[in-house]
Image (cartoon, rainbow over all chains, first blue to last red; front, side, top):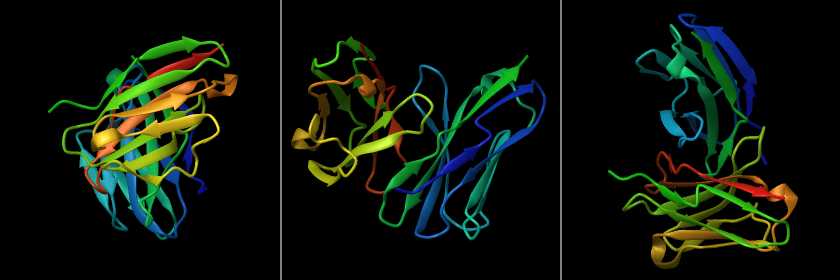
Length: 111
Length: 112
């Protein structure tokens, strides 16, 4: 079973602050890295699917980068808003099409 | 497009009882996944179906858990008998063959 780690485990920021989280994963047998946002009482929602080393993706105020050689991905949120409060999960997909999830980063944005 | 449907949303049972969860994936999605997410941990894959065949069930506790996907559409996950440590959120997800997964809202199981 592979180890996918996310840090920090939880985070509280003020509205308007920018923030970022880390997802660490094995650098071998890499196929893709997925980011999800999971709001309480809702379904996890896909944010990004990243496959190439050096990939950078952006959706509104949220962006992500990928380094497959060293095995990490960063998720950035610019100008955090209360509606960004959620748990952010990353999932490593290996070449055998297996998904391994991290434990998530719980973000609370304080108005 | 309708999303992944799951029922029930919440279930409370006593240990040693049986329970079943239902999932209806997005129409046309060949791959279906069941995950178990225990509080404080990331989702753990229990079983993956490709159409009505099992692709991976290596982490399914087969002495008490079973799952089926008859006709390659809906799926049910059963626990018999339940233990305290089975308390978790059970997530169902579906995808086109090897693409992005779409999740249902989950079933929160509490075993007393």
